[in-house]
Length: 64
Length: 237
Image (cartoon, rainbow over all chains, first blue to last red):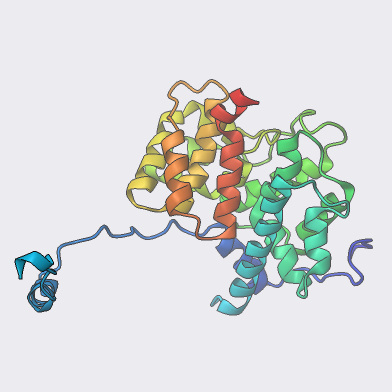
Protein backbone atom coordinates (compact mmCIF):
# COMPACT_ATOMS: atom_id res chain seq x y z
CA UNK A 1 0.00 0.00 0.00
CA UNK A 2 1.22 3.48 -0.82
CA UNK A 3 1.07 6.66 1.23
CA UNK A 4 -0.85 8.94 -1.09
CA UNK A 5 -1.64 12.61 -0.63
CA UNK A 6 -4.44 12.23 -3.15
CA UNK A 7 -6.43 9.48 -1.51
CA UNK A 8 -7.68 9.55 2.06
CA UNK A 9 -7.51 5.77 2.22
CA UNK A 10 -5.16 3.48 0.32
CA UNK A 11 -6.78 1.53 -2.48
CA UNK A 12 -6.27 -2.21 -2.48
CA UNK A 13 -4.74 -3.76 -5.58
CA UNK A 14 -7.32 -4.94 -8.08
CA UNK A 15 -8.71 -8.42 -7.85
CA UNK A 16 -8.45 -10.70 -10.86
CA UNK A 17 -12.02 -9.86 -11.79
CA UNK A 18 -11.41 -6.10 -11.58
CA UNK A 19 -8.24 -6.47 -13.60
CA UNK A 20 -10.11 -8.45 -16.21
CA UNK A 21 -12.74 -5.70 -16.43
CA UNK A 22 -10.06 -3.10 -17.17
CA UNK A 23 -8.46 -5.34 -19.77
CA UNK A 24 -11.84 -5.92 -21.41
CA UNK A 25 -12.39 -2.18 -21.75
CA UNK A 26 -8.89 -1.57 -23.13
CA UNK A 27 -9.15 -4.43 -25.60
CA UNK A 28 -12.74 -3.81 -26.67
CA UNK A 29 -13.24 -5.17 -30.20
CA UNK A 30 -14.32 -2.96 -33.04
CA UNK A 31 -18.02 -2.34 -33.46
CA UNK A 32 -20.15 -4.62 -35.57
CA UNK A 33 -20.83 -3.50 -39.10
CA UNK A 34 -23.63 -0.98 -39.10
CA UNK A 35 -26.00 -1.98 -41.83
CA UNK A 36 -26.87 0.34 -44.65
CA UNK A 37 -30.57 0.83 -45.49
CA UNK A 38 -31.67 -2.30 -47.32
CA UNK A 39 -34.65 -3.26 -49.47
CA UNK A 40 -37.47 -4.62 -47.34
CA UNK A 41 -40.18 -6.23 -49.49
CA UNK A 42 -42.55 -6.56 -46.53
CA UNK A 43 -42.64 -2.77 -46.29
CA UNK A 44 -43.92 -2.36 -49.85
CA UNK A 45 -47.56 -3.16 -48.94
CA UNK A 46 -47.50 -0.68 -46.08
CA UNK A 47 -46.05 2.07 -48.27
CA UNK A 48 -48.62 1.36 -51.01
CA UNK A 49 -51.52 1.52 -48.58
CA UNK A 50 -50.21 4.79 -47.14
CA UNK A 51 -50.07 6.27 -50.64
CA UNK A 52 -53.59 5.12 -51.44
CA UNK A 53 -55.08 6.24 -48.14
CA UNK A 54 -53.38 9.62 -48.05
CA UNK A 55 -55.69 12.64 -48.59
CA UNK A 56 -55.81 14.14 -52.04
CA UNK A 57 -53.84 17.26 -52.72
CA UNK A 58 -55.81 20.50 -52.20
CA UNK A 59 -57.08 22.26 -55.30
CA UNK A 60 -57.11 25.93 -56.12
CA UNK A 61 -60.50 27.61 -55.41
CA UNK A 62 -61.02 28.39 -59.10
CA UNK A 63 -60.73 24.78 -60.16
CA UNK A 64 -63.69 23.64 -58.06
CA UNK B 1 -12.99 -16.80 -14.90
CA UNK B 2 -16.43 -15.50 -15.89
CA UNK B 3 -16.40 -11.73 -16.24
CA UNK B 4 -19.15 -10.06 -14.27
CA UNK B 5 -20.83 -7.13 -15.97
CA UNK B 6 -20.92 -5.13 -12.74
CA UNK B 7 -17.32 -3.82 -12.67
CA UNK B 8 -17.25 -3.43 -16.44
CA UNK B 9 -20.36 -1.24 -16.40
CA UNK B 10 -19.12 0.85 -13.46
CA UNK B 11 -15.68 1.24 -15.02
CA UNK B 12 -17.17 2.13 -18.42
CA UNK B 13 -19.29 4.84 -16.81
CA UNK B 14 -16.20 6.22 -15.08
CA UNK B 15 -14.29 6.17 -18.39
CA UNK B 16 -17.03 8.30 -19.92
CA UNK B 17 -16.92 10.72 -17.00
CA UNK B 18 -13.13 11.11 -17.17
CA UNK B 19 -13.21 11.46 -20.96
CA UNK B 20 -15.71 14.29 -20.57
CA UNK B 21 -13.42 16.05 -18.05
CA UNK B 22 -10.46 15.67 -20.41
CA UNK B 23 -12.46 16.95 -23.37
CA UNK B 24 -13.45 19.98 -21.35
CA UNK B 25 -9.83 20.52 -20.33
CA UNK B 26 -8.87 20.70 -24.02
CA UNK B 27 -11.09 23.76 -24.37
CA UNK B 28 -10.62 25.41 -20.98
CA UNK B 29 -7.55 26.00 -18.82
CA UNK B 30 -6.59 22.95 -16.78
CA UNK B 31 -7.91 23.31 -13.20
CA UNK B 32 -5.28 23.81 -10.54
CA UNK B 33 -6.11 20.56 -8.79
CA UNK B 34 -5.54 18.62 -12.02
CA UNK B 35 -8.00 16.93 -14.34
CA UNK B 36 -7.22 13.33 -13.47
CA UNK B 37 -6.69 14.01 -9.78
CA UNK B 38 -9.95 15.93 -9.62
CA UNK B 39 -11.77 13.03 -11.24
CA UNK B 40 -10.31 10.55 -8.75
CA UNK B 41 -10.93 12.81 -5.76
CA UNK B 42 -14.55 13.52 -6.66
CA UNK B 43 -15.46 9.95 -7.57
CA UNK B 44 -17.82 8.05 -5.33
CA UNK B 45 -16.11 4.83 -6.41
CA UNK B 46 -12.36 5.46 -6.24
CA UNK B 47 -11.52 2.06 -7.68
CA UNK B 48 -13.64 2.72 -10.74
CA UNK B 49 -12.03 6.15 -11.15
CA UNK B 50 -8.56 4.60 -11.06
CA UNK B 51 -9.69 1.92 -13.51
CA UNK B 52 -10.81 4.68 -15.90
CA UNK B 53 -7.36 6.24 -15.66
CA UNK B 54 -5.82 2.94 -16.72
CA UNK B 55 -8.31 2.38 -19.54
CA UNK B 56 -7.71 5.79 -21.12
CA UNK B 57 -3.94 5.32 -21.02
CA UNK B 58 -1.83 8.31 -22.07
CA UNK B 59 -5.00 10.13 -23.14
CA UNK B 60 -5.25 11.28 -19.53
CA UNK B 61 -2.27 13.51 -20.34
CA UNK B 62 -3.76 14.80 -23.60
CA UNK B 63 -4.53 18.36 -22.37
CA UNK B 64 -0.97 18.80 -21.09
CA UNK B 65 0.85 17.05 -23.95
CA UNK B 66 -1.13 18.90 -26.62
CA UNK B 67 -0.31 22.16 -24.85
CA UNK B 68 3.36 21.18 -24.80
CA UNK B 69 3.66 21.10 -21.02
CA UNK B 70 4.26 18.41 -18.46
CA UNK B 71 1.28 17.01 -16.58
CA UNK B 72 0.92 18.48 -13.11
CA UNK B 73 2.16 16.65 -10.01
CA UNK B 74 -1.34 15.77 -8.80
CA UNK B 75 -2.27 14.24 -12.12
CA UNK B 76 0.95 12.26 -12.17
CA UNK B 77 0.25 11.03 -8.68
CA UNK B 78 -3.24 9.96 -9.70
CA UNK B 79 -1.83 7.97 -12.62
CA UNK B 80 0.79 6.39 -10.35
CA UNK B 81 -2.03 5.32 -8.03
CA UNK B 82 -3.92 3.82 -10.95
CA UNK B 83 -0.86 1.86 -12.03
CA UNK B 84 -0.42 0.62 -8.47
CA UNK B 85 -4.05 -0.41 -8.10
CA UNK B 86 -4.20 -1.99 -11.57
CA UNK B 87 -0.71 -3.30 -12.29
CA UNK B 88 -0.01 -4.93 -15.63
CA UNK B 89 -0.19 -8.63 -15.07
CA UNK B 90 1.24 -11.53 -17.00
CA UNK B 91 -0.70 -12.58 -20.06
CA UNK B 92 -2.24 -9.17 -20.68
CA UNK B 93 -2.77 -8.16 -24.32
CA UNK B 94 -0.07 -6.08 -25.91
CA UNK B 95 -2.19 -2.91 -25.99
CA UNK B 96 -2.78 -3.03 -22.22
CA UNK B 97 0.94 -3.42 -21.60
CA UNK B 98 1.98 -0.70 -24.04
CA UNK B 99 -0.53 1.85 -22.72
CA UNK B 100 0.51 1.25 -19.10
CA UNK B 101 4.18 1.55 -20.01
CA UNK B 102 3.54 4.80 -21.84
CA UNK B 103 1.75 6.22 -18.79
CA UNK B 104 4.63 5.16 -16.57
CA UNK B 105 7.12 6.75 -18.97
CA UNK B 106 5.30 10.10 -18.96
CA UNK B 107 5.07 10.33 -15.18
CA UNK B 108 8.75 9.39 -14.86
CA UNK B 109 9.86 12.19 -17.18
CA UNK B 110 11.73 14.80 -15.18
CA UNK B 111 11.62 17.93 -17.32
CA UNK B 112 10.04 18.85 -20.60
CA UNK B 113 7.27 16.76 -22.16
CA UNK B 114 9.49 16.00 -25.15
CA UNK B 115 12.63 15.37 -23.12
CA UNK B 116 13.97 11.97 -24.02
CA UNK B 117 11.45 9.24 -24.54
CA UNK B 118 12.01 5.96 -22.81
CA UNK B 119 11.96 2.93 -24.97
CA UNK B 120 8.99 0.84 -23.97
CA UNK B 121 9.80 -2.62 -22.79
CA UNK B 122 7.23 -4.03 -25.14
CA UNK B 123 8.34 -3.53 -28.68
CA UNK B 124 6.19 -3.57 -31.76
CA UNK B 125 7.44 -6.84 -33.16
CA UNK B 126 4.10 -8.54 -32.65
CA UNK B 127 2.50 -5.88 -34.83
CA UNK B 128 5.15 -5.56 -37.49
CA UNK B 129 4.16 -8.72 -39.34
CA UNK B 130 0.40 -8.48 -38.84
CA UNK B 131 -1.85 -8.17 -41.90
CA UNK B 132 -3.26 -4.70 -42.42
CA UNK B 133 -6.69 -5.45 -40.93
CA UNK B 134 -5.28 -6.91 -37.71
CA UNK B 135 -2.68 -4.14 -37.62
CA UNK B 136 -5.34 -1.44 -37.89
CA UNK B 137 -7.57 -3.09 -35.29
CA UNK B 138 -4.72 -3.26 -32.79
CA UNK B 139 -3.59 0.26 -33.61
CA UNK B 140 -7.11 1.56 -32.93
CA UNK B 141 -6.95 0.07 -29.43
CA UNK B 142 -3.60 1.84 -28.94
CA UNK B 143 -4.90 5.22 -30.12
CA UNK B 144 -4.17 6.92 -26.74
CA UNK B 145 -0.53 6.64 -27.79
CA UNK B 146 -1.19 8.87 -30.81
CA UNK B 147 -0.18 12.05 -29.04
CA UNK B 148 2.76 14.41 -29.45
CA UNK B 149 5.44 13.78 -26.85
CA UNK B 150 4.37 10.18 -26.44
CA UNK B 151 6.95 8.44 -28.59
CA UNK B 152 6.90 4.70 -28.95
CA UNK B 153 7.94 1.92 -31.25
CA UNK B 154 4.26 1.66 -32.20
CA UNK B 155 4.24 5.27 -33.44
CA UNK B 156 7.31 4.60 -35.57
CA UNK B 157 5.66 1.47 -36.97
CA UNK B 158 2.51 3.45 -37.75
CA UNK B 159 4.64 5.94 -39.68
CA UNK B 160 6.28 3.15 -41.67
CA UNK B 161 2.94 1.46 -42.36
CA UNK B 162 1.00 4.65 -43.02
CA UNK B 163 -0.73 3.10 -46.03
CA UNK B 164 -2.17 0.38 -43.77
CA UNK B 165 -3.30 3.03 -41.30
CA UNK B 166 -5.11 4.82 -44.13
CA UNK B 167 -6.69 1.55 -45.24
CA UNK B 168 -7.86 1.02 -41.67
CA UNK B 169 -9.49 4.46 -41.57
CA UNK B 170 -11.30 3.84 -44.84
CA UNK B 171 -12.40 0.37 -43.74
CA UNK B 172 -13.79 1.74 -40.47
CA UNK B 173 -15.65 4.47 -42.34
CA UNK B 174 -17.16 1.93 -44.73
CA UNK B 175 -18.21 -0.19 -41.75
CA UNK B 176 -19.69 2.94 -40.13
CA UNK B 177 -17.59 2.18 -37.08
CA UNK B 178 -16.95 5.83 -36.31
CA UNK B 179 -15.20 5.37 -32.95
CA UNK B 180 -12.60 3.15 -34.65
CA UNK B 181 -12.37 5.58 -37.58
CA UNK B 182 -11.66 8.47 -35.20
CA UNK B 183 -9.02 6.49 -33.34
CA UNK B 184 -7.22 5.43 -36.49
CA UNK B 185 -7.52 8.92 -37.96
CA UNK B 186 -5.56 10.14 -34.94
CA UNK B 187 -2.70 7.90 -36.04
CA UNK B 188 -3.04 9.16 -39.60
CA UNK B 189 -2.90 12.76 -38.43
CA UNK B 190 0.13 12.05 -36.28
CA UNK B 191 2.09 10.25 -39.00
CA UNK B 192 1.02 12.76 -41.68
CA UNK B 193 2.67 15.44 -39.58
CA UNK B 194 5.83 13.36 -39.44
CA UNK B 195 6.32 12.97 -43.14
CA UNK B 196 4.57 9.67 -43.77
CA UNK B 197 4.96 8.47 -47.34
CA UNK B 198 1.26 7.91 -47.96
CA UNK B 199 -0.81 10.67 -46.41
CA UNK B 200 -4.58 10.36 -46.18
CA UNK B 201 -6.64 13.53 -46.62
CA UNK B 202 -8.35 13.73 -43.26
CA UNK B 203 -10.66 16.73 -43.60
CA UNK B 204 -13.60 14.73 -45.06
CA UNK B 205 -13.09 12.00 -42.46
CA UNK B 206 -13.13 14.50 -39.60
CA UNK B 207 -16.19 16.27 -40.98
CA UNK B 208 -18.11 13.01 -41.44
CA UNK B 209 -17.16 11.60 -38.06
CA UNK B 210 -18.15 14.83 -36.31
CA UNK B 211 -21.54 14.84 -38.02
CA UNK B 212 -22.36 11.15 -37.68
CA UNK B 213 -20.51 9.66 -34.84
CA UNK B 214 -20.36 11.63 -31.62
CA UNK B 215 -21.97 8.88 -29.63
CA UNK B 216 -19.90 9.01 -26.46
CA UNK B 217 -17.66 11.26 -24.43
CA UNK B 218 -14.70 9.06 -25.25
CA UNK B 219 -15.31 9.43 -28.94
CA UNK B 220 -15.74 13.18 -28.54
CA UNK B 221 -12.33 13.20 -26.86
CA UNK B 222 -10.83 11.20 -29.74
CA UNK B 223 -12.30 13.63 -32.26
CA UNK B 224 -11.07 16.66 -30.30
CA UNK B 225 -7.54 15.21 -30.18
CA UNK B 226 -7.79 14.35 -33.87
CA UNK B 227 -8.71 17.94 -34.70
CA UNK B 228 -5.75 19.18 -32.69
CA UNK B 229 -3.43 16.79 -34.51
CA UNK B 230 -4.68 17.42 -38.02
CA UNK B 231 -2.11 19.12 -40.27
CA UNK B 232 -4.62 21.77 -41.42
CA UNK B 233 -4.92 23.04 -37.86
CA UNK B 234 -1.18 22.90 -37.35
CA UNK B 235 -0.70 25.06 -40.46
CA UNK B 236 -3.25 27.53 -39.14
CA UNK B 237 -1.38 27.75 -35.83
